Length: 241
Picture (cartoon, rainbow, N blue to C red):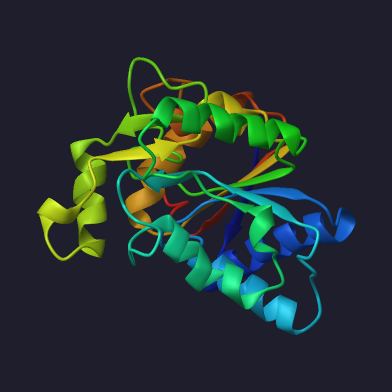
């Protein structure tokens, strides 16, 4: 596990964007696994700027997002479909047919999850997976527990995650209690993984990710078992290393 500590959020975001751009420039038809949330926003902004400067071409890239809220329509401003459109997709030359996000509105979630896994396999697997991290060590919506989902599944969110996500909604009642999330085994099958973390509130999770035991109660600690993981974090998130 390689740990890169940058001074602040801006430099961390820039470093992450450079690694993504390097992947795409070396392999134009790369399959990227993408994350949402506040942490990757800066990276997406940097990638958009790089695209407009002619430094990266997304025309052959295929993307798969980690997760989506259950029963939140794609046009809802808090959905991850909407997030990805606003932060990346509509600003670069990614073809819509090459972008994939779990569908949270379908009735048969078991079939949807199996279909999503099959699409990843048909694309050849993930070349580079981008991850954020929750303060409890969750990645995607793989929440701490005695067991973790292996593949894409409909999951219940913990009260801690629901509380954390409530800042994005007008009222606590609007916060989804479930989400569709790519599972840990699928994440760990990626050729390369980068994990981003910013802020002192992520420091404990980063400490456990890097130096703690491999434990399903800290899902991010399972990244220790992967041969090609890079953590890109700011000084505040690295505070306890």
